[in-house]
Amino acid sequence: MGESDQLADLLQELKERSGRSYTALASRTGLSRSSVHRYCQGLTVPASFGAVERIARVCGAGQEDLDRLYSAWTRAEEEASGEPEPELQEEPAVASELRPRPASATSRRGPPRLRTLLIALLLGIAAAASAVVLDGLPGGGPDGNVDGGTDAKEGGGPEAQHVDGPYWALAPKPLDREFFGITMNTDTGLMPGFDVGGVRLWESETRWSQVEPERGKFDWEVLERSVRGAERRRLPVLFVFGGTPGWAAPGGPKTPYLDDSRASPPDDLADWEHFVEEVATRYRSRIEAYELWDSVGAGSHYDGSMTTLAEMVRRAAHIIRRADPDAQVACPSFGRLWEPEGRALLAEFVRSGAYEFCDAAALKLHPRRADGPPEEMIELAARTENIFRKNSRNQRVWNTGPGAEIDDGAKLSDRRANDYAVRFFLVGLYIHKSNVDRMYFYAWGSRNIPLVVQLVGGRPTEAGRRIGRLHGWLADTRVSSCGKGRGMGLPDGVFECVFQRGRVREPEVAGPWLAIRWTQRGRASGRLGEGAHLLRRMDGSSERVRAGERVEYGETPVLVEHRA
Image (cartoon, rainbow, N blue to C red; front, side):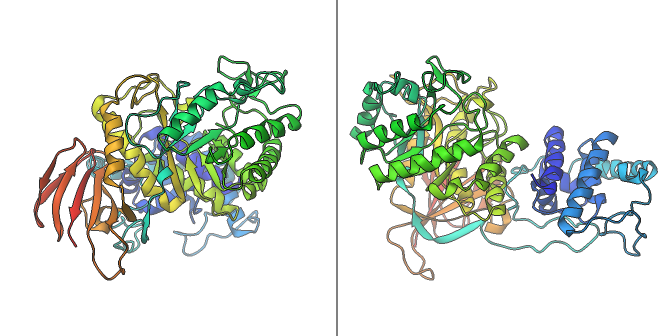
């Protein structure tokens, strides 16, 4: 992990502890929102420790926190400059954006106490003066630095440039069918009772230990039932490898599952090769894609080294492509990505070179808590994208949703469940800029999760029906852009993704299009633009509208259709 990452992790920890959004921190520190975001993401090292200290103080940091931050900032600054800092340095004439003078060994342990006290006093006055600003605005949480509004002044300098436009925009492109995926939690072979685009087999009693309970002896019944169920619905299948049989790793720690599965890799990788070949050969042209392990980062699922995992990936990818050249291969899904340790493990795996053998990276992108807003995934996607970028990779991502690591007992109300289920996929479109092109909702069939979409043998919940309705809204459309707020000509805090109907026209020729809009929290209203004629709601109702008419947006997404 680089020094800038360590500094960023300390700042992010303080931010999360304080519960404040980037916008709230910006308003209280006098820094721009984009600067606070960059510092907490590790994308930029602040030019002065004063910026770090302002953020820390607003987050309630104590002296020990400041000492750790000062040490981390000094190391990050040295790393960024590529030169060691001299023992003694004269105070520069212009000190506001240059590093502070470490006048003695004691000053290296942290900023002077008197200076710290004065800054704390000034920040306290500033915070009191601005206590009512911004915290109550919708969409004030992290949003991947796409605020759309004008940033606050940083360090007394000029306002940041205001730029209109979306977070991302491309030539209109059809959504892959598999984008609307869902992880199965059943061994029955039954499929969701609402429209989805693909299924992921993991919580489906199809672990390696269950399919090959004894070396060379296979039980295909459950896996065959699941694949046939998907085939009847014409749903592409993503099969997940994992759960080493006890006979292949007798000394390995057991997984949380009831069967005799182990979290360690097999003692002999020849056993792994044999199993992968058996599955890929038997299901040639029937299983569309393979994920090469689940929940790396959670010791309960994988406790081996990244070197061994990379070698397992290399061998499995070669076998699968030989047995079924049309099948896609996703590298193991990494979890615990909100934690520094989880991100460090992912970075180590990226450096191993294993992604050279995969079509996609499986990642567990999810809110910080089980009941957190889906929009928090925007920040996490940016963090993981930065890991790939630092290692010179531009990697497709399949989001396999949260796992047991964030099962904190939270249960969503009906209203929040209905909204969150739909926004999970909409946020997936929003983070398309971070190369996310599949979303697998976790999970179908179970009741022991925060958000239930359908129980096995029961009818879909309203949340499940709304996922199907969103899927129907977007059938035969092409996505062209996503953005937020004033940059898109919308009220602050309103997210938007834009789609075109019919065949693609020349960019300068306007055609019929539709926009789905929502907020992370709260409500906002705005007037409809030219061509608006129909508003559809997630409960299935619709109403005629006209350009210039004022519409209220909230946490439940709505669709606005526009004529050519």
